[in-house]
Image (cartoon, rainbow over all chains, first blue to last red; front, top):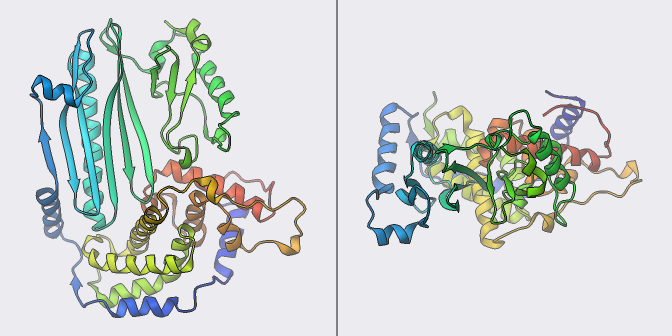
Length: 279
Length: 167
């Protein structure tokens, strides 16, 4: 929706003379004039397909490593010691480097475990396939533009009762964009537990956590600021994990609630704030 | 669909040459750097012209290439630029209205995160989705920057308190 302010700014943008450097137009003209003649036909399915095949064949490398030896697995992943989950390995690694675009995607797989682990694995596969697919599409579309995709993972928690896997992604195009997916498994019940699954039904956990995040937003680190007005509340599926002291940590992607200069931000909720609301 | 010849390409570049310089200047600090980035973007765009699937989207396409060039320059010359290093200047209260900033002067005083989004939205008439494509940002991130950039622009232009609910 356009309002009066927008209309006025657009009018100013149109009407105000913009100060171009004196030699700029001449330089643009000279640059264009020096280009070698060529004719590029509008894309057809054939040329598009060839471009994709070229990208895939020349640049992409898939390394499937589902059957790692124990020492190799140990080198690539942190190996849990307790509970039904045996280990987390790099199931697949995708790398790409053509001098302009770079990708390094490590796709984890939780080995052992029950249906919860299988569910996490399926989601991770789908998620990383989607990221890689988008990266390839961007490469094909943008030619020599600079693109970057890095995906890594780590085991955040692994106790007798609880397991947390974190998958972090960084997309770099004009600027970076950090985002994460965090999976929590209750080993006792073999269930993937979303945030709302931690709390008693009918409890006011959402209001309590939202108020606490808002309180922390009002006291940002010195020199920084949060987009408090863009924070509408803690969602039922908000990324979370427990820190070493048992406090609840709510994780937000870059730009979600803070300027890009702050990166991805997290809010630690003290155990005392939410403990009475747990199931 | 037009055949994408050198003349067709050159015509498109000339048509949006002001947009190219203005956008580069929102990211880079000097006219010289901006001119260099535009020149590099023109050469890269021509080299990868076959990747342009929809000729009518030439402007956002070349702006995307340009912003990548600009950020590449930033990375080479300033490995990390903190937002606080280029913080905007807020005019003191009681600024004389006769000394109000021009729009471009105000835009130049915005933090870089907001400056480019504001320029693409107001000067270049790109929509949220297109800006996200140019800058490699989610639409939510573009909306956030636009919202906050507008609020700061109002202050800089002496329009604090203007009521609106857009974006």
